Length: 332
Image (cartoon, rainbow, N blue to C red; front, side):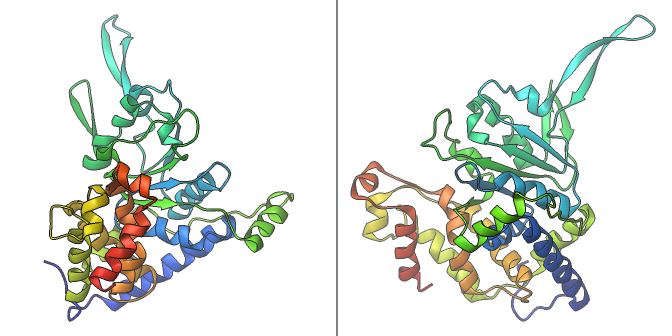
């Protein structure tokens, strides 16, 4: 049952989680300069138990961010560098035929890099659609099926993928079903001048900052449970419902949505946004989310769960334009 603002959570548990998250943010910021918003959104996605997709041109420290987050959270990690010739077995693992000391042959399963708590998938859209699909079951069910046998993945299990802009050479667009597996899509932009100056000075010296471990796997699982215990008021719940439903052309939508939206967010989007605003409240050391959290997280949660039609492209209409109109329509 959804907790309301009149419900309460254990204050000691809340303060312990808030303290650890404050430390985690500080440690990551030591290594990744000028990307505080990106750090917060990434942690928000992981606090929800979800997967995160980072999009940006090469050289914006996406990989460094993922590596630093894994270290700070104390999770076992593995990395997959996607290329067009990467095969599903390179990700999931495969069975090999071996001969024992008794001369009998048998199959032995060799685990792939997916058998970890924190899987970094670098440049995911450079892998072929066949290989991309190998992650679908893992991301949704927390298991993989190889040779007809289900194999459970470690807990917690998170995928943080980086993606280059689709306009670049050698990329494959992710299918809608896989995009929906990511709780958030975070656009990584260029740092401001001051942050880029720090990058120049620090990264070209002999002394590089290092992030230290702050949490462990059980700490993260406990935080994820706490996020689901966070109370949410009716105003926040209604704001999420109104926003998501207003984005659907099939509903009682505005003329703008009916004219330009090709496909719209489903119930999973509302679930993701509900978890995200609770996590944002905890990260901000607040006991309950507000409608400001809904507005702040609507774009990273909904952007990859919507698509505009060709008419929108021709008229220069973007998803942020649509969402801005929905904010006004729903009073956010």
